[in-house]
Image (tube, rainbow, N blue to C red):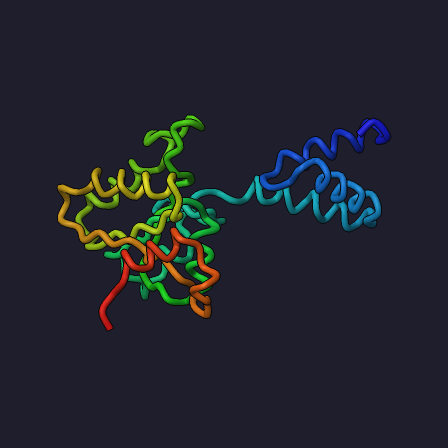
Length: 199
C-alpha cells in the first residue's frame, strides 16, 4: 500500500471493510474505480447513498424495503400462517428465487455467535414473538444455516416458542440435486440420512 497516494489508500481501506473483501481485492476495486468514467463513479456513489436513505426494514418481517411493509407481506396470496425464519435478507432472496415457498418470512439479521458477542438479544426475536402472540401463526419453518451458529439459533427458537401451539419444521439438509455421493462430505451424508423421508 506504500505505493498508493493517500486518497487511494483511504478508498482501499474503506472497500476492505466490506465482507469477503480482502486488501488485494479492495486494491483491484479501487483501481477499477480509478479507470471508470466520472459518470460511472457518480452513479455508484449515488446508488450507495440512495440505498442508505430510502431502504428501511419491513415492520412485519424485517426484510429491507422502500415501504413500511414489504411486497411479500402485502401480498394477499401469501399464507400469513406460515413463517419461514431466516438469518439474513440474502437467504430470503435465495428462497424467493426458488419460487417454491408461498408463506411469509421473518429475518433475524444474524445468528447466535456468543464468541462474537451475538446473543439472543442481538437477534430480532422480540418481533417474532409479537407476530406469534397475535395467534395467526400455525407453522414456523426454521431456515437458519446448517452450521454451528444456525443450529444453535434453530434450537433457541424451538425452545423459546415450545409452549405456543405451533408446528416447527426445519429445512431439509443433505445431498444436493444432481450431486454424486462419492464427492459429498461426511457431515452432509450424515445429515441426509438423518433427514431422510418416505417415498
